[in-house]
Structure formats: structure tokens, C-alpha cells
Length: 230
Image (cartoon, rainbow, N blue to C red):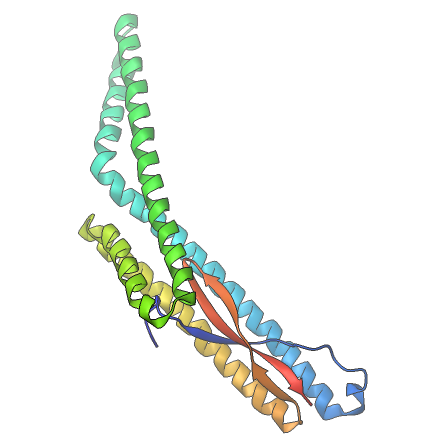
């Protein structure tokens, strides 16, 4: 299986037509439709869980990335803020000094907010660019795919170069995300294959169609199965 940035495929059953009114006349056909319906529900649950797991993984990744960025620019300010707060707490009715320290505290807090906003904006910009390129990759011609993949690699590098901590975090995130996608891919593919085979034994023929499912910042092609003949 290719890397996460590649087009990856999964399988999910999709009942493309309603049960025919006369399906009840054939118990085997009716059982095949019921099997497809049950499998659809189970696959939908697996995909929903995988999507939720991927979103949680991404949210935690972005939070940890922000913390790593903060360690360079914000931690010093936070330490200074704590020091000023300790000074204020130790004052003994020195109103003038307390006022000066309170003003200093406000200035420090403003600087912290400023730096945190810059970090959040930068991470959001990178995330949006990666998502846009991933969507672009799905519709790109073969000659353009290499360029887009290089751009994605450059965006990943822009995160990685910040520190070894970010590089480790990014590898952990992409590895976990790929595991989530591959797991749901393998499980749903096996479920759909077995159901298609059993349905075929009852004379119900199914074929694959396509739809997109989002897993965090990755858009993945899913190949549902719809009933075409029975």
C-alpha cells in the first residue's frame, strides 16, 4: 500500500437500489439483500469510527505541535509572567510597586497572546495548504502529481525543520493516520468481498462505484458496492 499522500482505496458496501417488491418471493435473494444491508451498517460504523479517530489524532497533533513551537517563544514569557505574579503576591502594601507590576503583567500577557496567535495562524495556514494540495492531487494528471507531491513534502519539511520534536511528532502522526486508514481499508474490503461472494451465490450481482471519505487531512477514495442485477 502506498503512503498516505498517495491515492488509497477502501471498500464499503452501498445498497444502490431499493428492495424490489417481489424480492420476498425468493428467500435466497431476500437473505442476500438483508446481508448487504447488515454489512452496510457495520461498514458505516467502522468508517465513522475511523474518521473520528483520525480527527482526534489530528487535533492532538496540532495541539502538540503548538506546544513545541511555544517552547521557543512563549515559555520564556510564561516564566516571566510567573515571576511577576510571585512578586505581586510577596508585596506588603506597596501600592505603587504593585501597580507597576500589574502593568508589566498585562504587557507580558499581551505578548503571549500575540505569539500564540502567530503560531496558530501559521499552523492553520500549513494545514489548509496541505488539505488543498491533497484535493488537487486527486484530480491531477499524472504529469502534475509529482509537482504536487513535492509541494506536500515541502510543507511537511516546513514543520519538521522547526525541531527534532516536531519531526518526531510528524512521523508519529502520519504513521498513526496511515494505520487508521489501512485498518479500515483491510477490514471493509474483507467484509465487502465476503458479502459480494455470498450475494452472488444467491444470484445477486454487485459492482464497485466510488466516493471520497475524509480522514483528518487526507481524502481517500472508497469503493462502495452497489447491486446491479439479481
